[in-house]
Image (cartoon, rainbow, N blue to C red; front, side, top):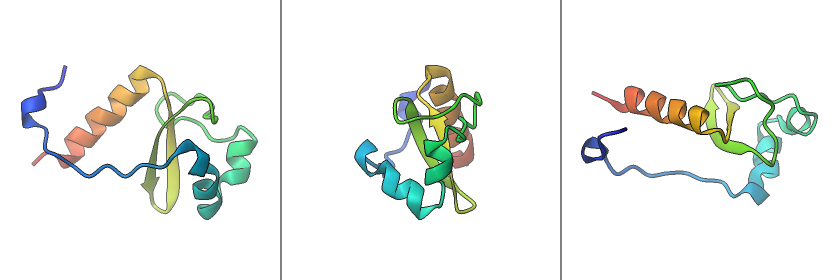
Length: 85
């Protein structure tokens, strides 16, 4: 469990699932996504419209994760370690 007392308020950027296609097109990953070639960067499962959990931008590429709790938990842990002093 995370100590919520030490978590700072942060701006969260979000994209609605209906705008995901536009975002994928912008980063030239739409065809890969639609062809089932985008994998969760945590567990390597195929990411689809039915299981998108998070989207990160890294080196001008979208990095997607699936919606499994374990993958979400890993993203949160990575975010906390990156943003910790």
